Length: 325
Image 1: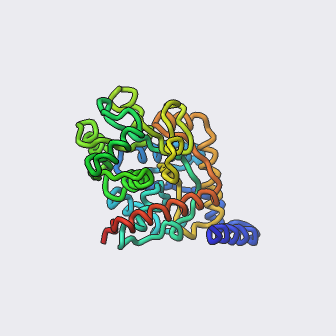
Image 2: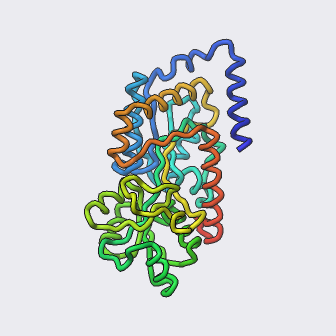
Image 3: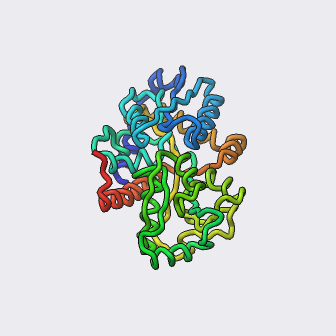
């Protein structure tokens, strides 16, 4: 935390010492900006990235082009941004997978989730919803936990893959609830949902944009929300804290990042473009229709959130020896 604040203060002091910003920074952007989305096209991360890119393009007058660089748990795309020229023309749509999980999970990772990037700002934040099939015997989280305690290891849960936020978050939730269940890793969100709907697993957690259509279509039942507050769309579904489970909050978030050493005036321009984009009701509506709620946070708070998650996920990965070498 102090390292982050000090680096920001240092950057601001250097900027203040300059009589005039460099010409390149003054004219930024003067050409196309690439926004790297570290997942395949068509998914929720891609949808959010394209909405923000269009908004920033409209405000700046220069193209903001989304490039999908998927693979290795989002680390290929993140590494590409970390090692590119720090001029503001290549940005990362960052997620917790790339920033706070992957550095623990992958032994040969080539970037640091904190030191390799300069944060521009948070875009969205959402809890997960714990789901069971509509025909499940469980009508509450307490019922699921009671069964799991009476039948250790007989229940299973699905996730988009080993070491994903869903996997690590559910392990943390189950541990805090004092129960165990078998993990069934799929190769992505779509296969995990197909497996869930096909009755291959007993429960999953998903973001609201993926979960709500299943709930509204009577294909799934919501038992709990993993965020600090109940969702307006599901006022009767308790949070895990409501259920007496402490320290098991988990969330999905997207933030915009630039490579470390990007000039302070360029970062200031990008932050202004992002803030103005997120203040536009049309963009808020577009994100909401894609299943996201805008979430803004000052940079020290964003850093604190990342550090908390970094520590929490690191403990789970170490305890389960999940490191990929």
